[in-house]
Image (cartoon, rainbow, N blue to C red; front, side):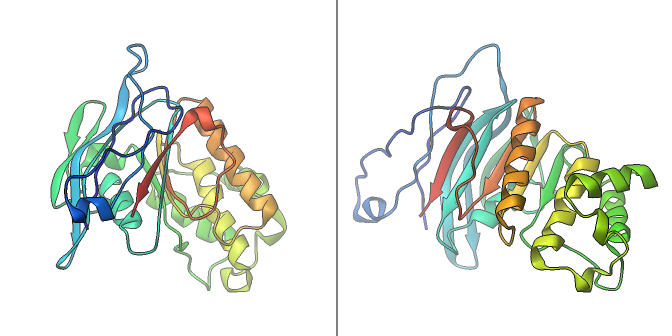
Amino acid sequence: MAKRDRRLSSPPGPQRAASPYNSPLQAALHTLLTSHAAAPDNPAMLSVHELAARRGHARLFAEVGFALAAGQALLITGANGTGKTTLLRILAGFSMPEHGETRWDGRAYKPFDERIRHVVAFAGHSPALKDELTTVENLSILAALSGARSTAAQLDDALAAVSLSRQRALPARSLSQGQRRRIGLARLHLVRRPLWILDEPITALDAAGAMLMESMIAAHLDSGGLAVAAIHQPLGLAPERCARLALS
């Protein structure tokens, strides 16, 4: 289903309502996205122009456009089936849009572009773990698949940072869903990428785990990183550094 878009540039701030629509179809659909004038000293690193996507014969969204600069986050909301994960996969360079363009640092990129592979850390809502392997073995493999060669000390430090030291030698099958998600958080400690793309990052996490995720994202933004997250639950990030895109 078609969506209207708004553009975001630095710094983000108060939300702006969608424009009036000229047809019944447009009136039934709307997208809300924070929008502000660009700051010349903080140029956009990730930008999207007139993006559209389909699933089979169904239009998920259209005319989506935004821009994010260093230190900014975009939070994507919407009901199941509105295209949140599809949009994340396009941004990560995993899928081809029906129409439109994605740019990193001013240069357009296509799916599986090697440039974007070295920029993105993608975390899906289902952790890709091998049940028969231990916690630390799974973390080592996940980091290696992302191009990070980690020492035993670095792996231990990453597990300690997400409170999984005691589960280090346990097989993944014995972990709770929240503990399995924490392995994904530990991977973000090891993989140094400027753009985090997160699909439902606090799903299955308890209150402490959600606070940990929020603090990790905040620290990443403080260091000049960017984050794009599809969410169903609020993230406790400072409103002035977050923009919102609603797919409906």
